[in-house]
Image 1: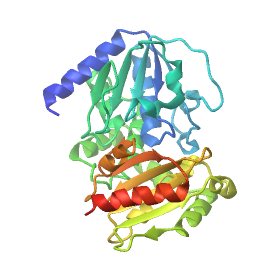
Image 2: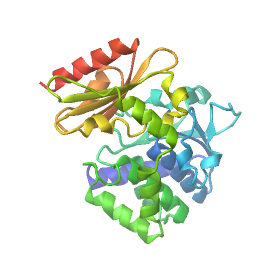
Image 3: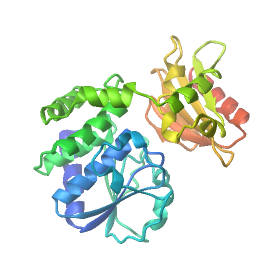
Length: 328
């Protein structure tokens, strides 16, 4: 994207915010670090611009992000369905309209929606769209939006932006760690963010429950005959038996990908309704976003996901075969 296009998109986003007084801020189901951080950063920006915001997500919220200011103000449809009024919607980090889940049932007919996202598979479902696939995380776009608005993040906002960058770049290790990402990270450190503390909390520590879940998954690690595809699975009873929650699944897929020679790692999770969710990671040769799209999903070239029809064995064999063909 050219500099002029980027500025135009940021101008349109600010105009959208200025034209409305109150907002519903939403992100994708099963929110990760970037989704929660982006929700909170948008809320911070709206407050600074004299606007009102209500933050809602369909899913349970990842408890490890409780340190972020405003986390407790994000409402989960798992626990309540609040009656709220708002003028417009801001969706952050949602690759497509469906990824917002049941929250969309709260939208009025013909609602105005600002879509801010970094997924290349985003189809521009908003009234106004700020889509930048080259951004490492949605918080990177929001940082630029804040600066474009003539504002400077305070420490708590800076923590949220840093959290989104840290988690979506794998601790600044993935190929999406651009010079711009490091420039922003440096500026956030200059605002007082403790990078080492956040890295230890988000990337190093794990609960006993997650360790048990990881042991369960690793015991099932399977490889294709040429060792280019590795996959693991979590059954629908495993979370409860390990005392784990959905956020404990994060990062497990990397244990398949990180084996030397593996080109695509996959984590399959059986859902309570008999479907199967698949998370794919690519070492670079396979475009897993294209594979995910062929199954109705989406994401990034190196990190994508999709929902498959059960049963588990059939879902696994079907997706593994599609990956196998993509690697030929």
